[in-house]
Image 1 (cartoon, rainbow, N blue to C red):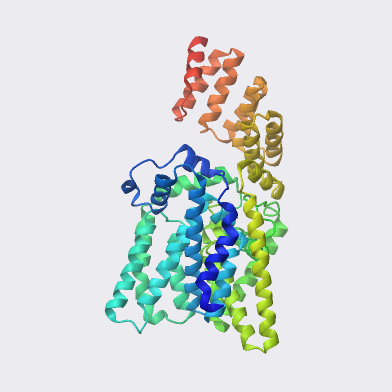
Image 2 (image 1 turned 60 degrees about the horizontal axis):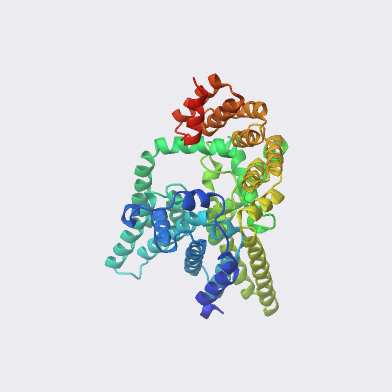
Length: 502
C-alpha cells in the first residue's frame, strides 16, 4: 500500500470530488467571477497569487465553472501529496499514507475544495507546507552548506512572495516552524533561522493599519458577532472546530451559535479550554508528535480567537490546514497498532479503512449540497435554521426566481432571529417596493439605515419608495445620499426623479 501512496492519494481525491465538476458558481463566486471577471493582462496580477490563478483560469475557462472546479481539485491533490511529505518526516510510509488518505477525503474540506471561492485556503496550505518542507530540508545535516542555503532562501522567498497578498492565515506559518523546532527540542540550533521570517511578518503587518481597520468593520457588520473576550472566542472556536473535525455530520456554510452568548456555556467552555491547555503541556513532555498536532490545530485557528472580529468565529474552510493535526494523530494510531500484536494491527487498519470510507461517503454527499444556488441555500437553511444570513440569502434566490411571497417569508424569518440584520431589512424594503407596500418599505429601510448608515442601496430603495408615493421632497435627499455613498443610480430612476421635480 505504502509503495503506491501518491497514486492512492490522487485516486482518492478524484473519486471523492469528481461529482463537483458540474457544480455551479455559488455565493461569493458570483461577485468574484461572474460580475467582476479578471480581464486585465496576467502580468498585472503577478504580485497576488490568488488573483493570478483566477485570471489564468479565466483566460482559458472564461465563465465555465468546470475549469474552476478542475483547478481546485488539482490544488487539493497537490496539498494532499504535500501532507504525505509532511507526515513522512514523522512516520513510516504506511502510517503517512493513512494520514494523507484521511486528509484527502475528509468532508470538512468540501467548503475549501468544492466552493470555488474557497480556493485561497488551498493556496495558503500549499504555500505553507512548501515553506515548511523547504525550511526543514535547509537544516538537514546531510545537506551540503550550499544546498542548505539554497533551500532556506527558497523557503524565505516563497514566504515573502505569498505574504504580499495572503497576510491573514498565511502570516502564521513561522509559528509552525517554531512549534516544530520547539517540539523536537531544536531551539538552540535553529532559533536564529526564525528571525528573518519574523522580520518579514513584522514589516508586512506595519503596512496593514488601514486594511486591518476596514476588515474589522466589515466582518463586524457581516457576522453580527458580539463576543469580544478572546478566552470565550478561543473556547468556542476550539471546541466547535474540533467537534466538526471529529464528527463532520452537520456541515453548513453558516454554523449556528445559539449557546455562545449563554454564561453557563461560556464557563464550561473556559473549563474545557483549561483542560485542553493542560493536555497540550503534558503532550509536550510525553509525545512530541502529538504536541505538533495540537500546535498545528491551534496556530491556524488563532485569528478566530481575536477580540476584534478579523474573521468569522466558525468556518469549515478554516480547518483545511488545522486538519493536518488530525492526520498526525492518525499516523500515531497507525504506528501504535503495528507495534502491538497482529490482531491489534489488523483492528487498527480496519478502523482506519472504515473511517476513510465513511468520510469519503460524507464528502461525496456534501458535494451535492453545492450543486447550484437554490439547493445550496435550502440545504444551508435546513442545517442552520437559526442563521439569519442563511435565510437572507435564500430569500435572494427566491426573489430572483420571482417567488416574492417565499422571499418575504425568509426575510421575516431572518429578522425574527436578528432584528439588527441590516441587509435583511434592506432586502425586505426592496421587496415591499416591488409589491407596492411603500409605507412598510420606508419603515424597514429606515431601520436598516439606523443599523448601518452607510448602505447606499438602502438610500436608493428609500428614494424609490418615496418617489412612487409621490413624495418628491423626501426622494431627492435619499437619492443624493445614495450617490454620496458611491451607489450608481439607474438611468430610468434618474429620469423619473427629474420628472418628479425638486
